[in-house]
Image 1 (spheres, rainbow, N blue to C red):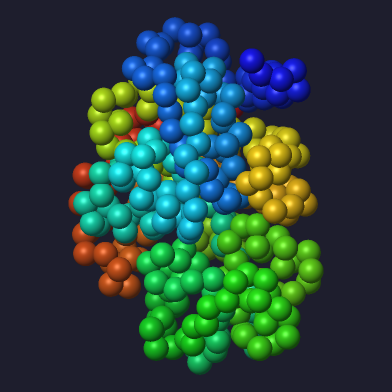
Image 2: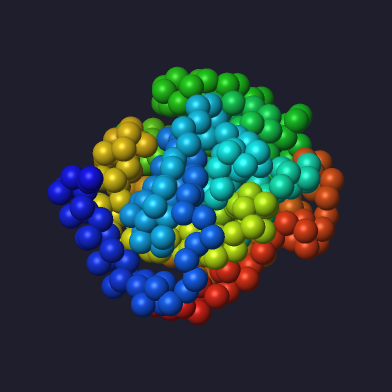
Length: 337
């Protein structure tokens, strides 16, 4: 039994999804999912809101057992581990992290892109462009292949000709400490991951040097993509398409009704504050899944990672062996709008 309040929220979500192009008659005409269980990862990562907002839509797609597997630690690393191990079936994650796993032959398939814009680089007055980071101190929450911020900023540095290992002094601090150090000018820059940029801008700490939602080339490629366990896709193609449709429609809901999406995250303890969550929902381009080509994103990040020495596989090999666009291509035709 579900509460009346939750039932009302679910009905409102369904109405919004239908207005945005979700067609129940098409869903009903398809074969039912081969499995009624779907598992995703529950982490405190605001940018992947669509997969949480999709809960009721997943139920409408025929999944009577929707599970969110709780994982502690670095969200992007835990997501990658859960999908590769089969503990979870499908999940949004940072594109570069999935690609780094694919380079190590992890059994994951990339199915679609969702949005760009998770990252923003903040600096003091001493930093006006990425090249200004040479010889400067940058604060991050973590370093190495387990840190999304470190990977992304390393790729940006390499893209403009700087050596991430030699040209920048890295220091690690929790977000609250990094924010204070940036405000005091004791570090020169900080790369934030949603909702951190929203908090920094609200407190007027530092200034934005690069916003990956609007600054090229980063704004032209997906930041978050949807990946699934390879065996799940092979065994359950109908379930894969239905789960993908629910998440992509939920992305449309995040774009159309950011207030509802932000409240959804706060009610489920997936984000620290409503204000930061709302600003994230309003700023991230959640409808880009209809416009960008996810293969371009895989190729772009694979090239950047290869140039930085972070992977060995070629973009062509990763695209050929670990992507599957057939479900997305079908859904783009079905969900026009």
